[in-house]
Image (cartoon, rainbow, N blue to C red):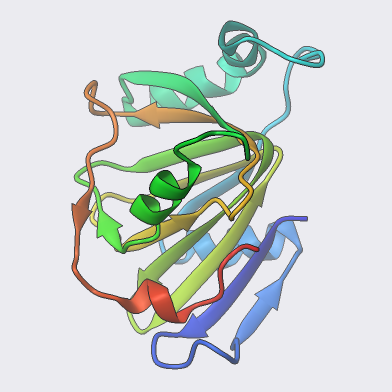
Length: 180
């Protein structure tokens, strides 16, 4: 179940707000200019869909977002617990960083934890199947895929070169809860 937990950026043990209600999550995040939506496929994906099938099932929603925001490219990424690079990838994403573009992810299956450092708060968003999140350019954040990752996501870019991170050097991510 999707969830939003908000902490102060000085107290990682006791949240100040929590909800699993999609509308409440959307309202909290929209107030911080973070987009949170739920998308539905326009076709059955089957058991092991190809990247083309995944994109096709959500092309209608992607097209609307592209028309609104001018994004230039998109792809599908899948990561499973048997990936030999899972620990390296998890570590890379766990460090606080920013991007010069929005970070847009739509979860086709599985889950991931986006953590945003906004003002004096840390917003932890557990994204699951059908969740779209768009983290605005320049927002300090980190991502946790868990120790046994399992997700498929559509990544949408306004930079044709894709994901480029600028690490902040702040160790704040180390203090907050992670996915198991």
